[in-house]
Image (cartoon, rainbow, N blue to C red; front, side, top):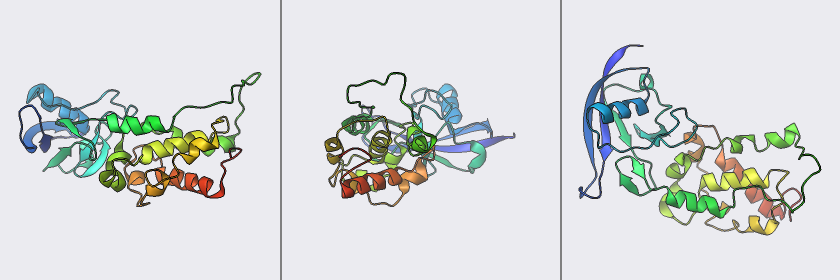
Length: 240
């Protein structure tokens, strides 16, 4: 891969010293095989150590480095410079979440709504003699929702979250479908009814922005539609 000179406009805001957010320009030479995350690390290492951003695995698994690159929400570690114009690359934090510093946002509201859907398998207290058996067909029904890495890209892209902070959001609702659609799950149907409201499954605009931005090709809108159908007929699998 070739080395090119890249121009970056990076969103900056430190609430302790800045009155307003601003964009700061950076120019540096990088191999085009580098990722946007690699570029941010280079900026932090060689140009401005005060630049704040999140990352962990650097392998598109943890979801920590979700941000907006040239207006599109993506994982910075997964977005290669070779796919971007070198003239100007604009980097911004995730929308719909309060900015703590630069590209770091407060994820607490995202985790709060996620916890509300009780994202764990719930049993009736009985354990199988050997193991739970799940058929390929049953597993395939929830496969894509298992793949969610909770990066909050869908939450940042959701227009409903932008206008209603009480809305549970696409990630939480898709994860709820992952569990209620799991044949091993025995949660009461009454728990599903708790999302039977405008801030739950009925708030979705079905504009599919969550699908467009998901780095793992999860389709949250499909899961929300399945929950709506379950509520409409009054049951989900064996749950009533």
